[in-house]
Length: 423
Image 1 (cartoon, rainbow, N blue to C red):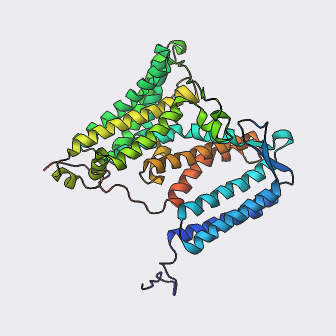
Image 2 (cartoon, rainbow, N blue to C red):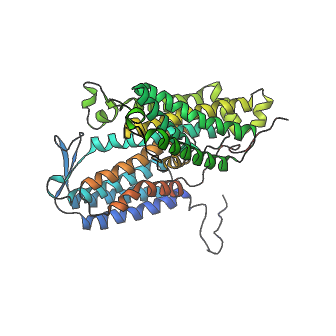
Image 3 (cartoon, one colour):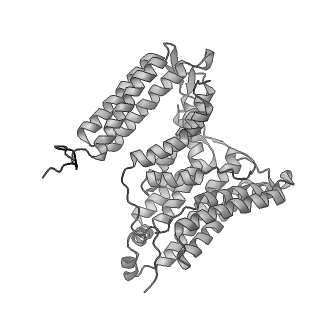
């Protein structure tokens, strides 16, 4: 194989400095920061990590300084292996980042005053999954749309419509099931507008998504002021989804509180990840969907009804994203407020890209962002010297780093965002 050189830099093999190797170098630098900076800032006081939902009970303990340095060295080692080999990108990146976070936590937990030097890992895992739920469902909605060739920037609008419908109809009916069904219909209505305007009238899909977001935010704000704000008891006090505790399984350390002391949204999200992944890659519907998203003309010549399939998948995406909106008013809170989705629809879109338009990848990316959010809450509870404003930035910083730094070059479905006209 002939070596190529970087322009202006003699003797540098551009084939050697792949994205994987460059990422490895960055991870080595992060590991050095962890080992040196976190190690110096940590105290010799023990950092305790409880395996349950609370800080009581069994806990793993390690001196803060020692833990920060050891995990920093592990982060360096994993990054160095990636830089040297350029192989197993996901494994070494995940290991290095996990060690970096562990080093950071050793610093933060060890410096916590009094009896606060314990972090409940079960609570951290449970909170991460719950905070990722709307992102998971929104990203799955995006997968269904974009695998079909329709860009879905309107996830934020589907969220807010679902949140509003869940709060209003959940309150009127006094039922969480009515709220969830109403939320899915709310997301469906926004998706119907997206489908008709993008597929039938060929409106630019990115601009259309932004317009639909503004429309949904404005409409729900108007209806909130006209109905909910004037009579909260009648229209804006929906029931909260209950937690379902599974005996014995719920007592498993870390995993138990996360998966077996959960709510309906957790099980729906996990089931949809499995179902959509299986459907996309193991069924005739999935094959046709991927064909329509990659090469609609070829799919058309084979008898696939391109526009009909796009309509169905976009509407299905609205149902899924609308359920994600219900988590805002039936789980996170028990009432609706204007603009309460706070831009999470765009983070769901980032999770879709980070996950490379794959249902499982999108789920893991959403879980990563949920972890960043929960980590900010957990660190705040330790009376951390880090300003709360910086901690609030963590989920968004993680989004930028993940999409810009870790994903590298990604390729969306070839026909994504491109209208199709028969004939």
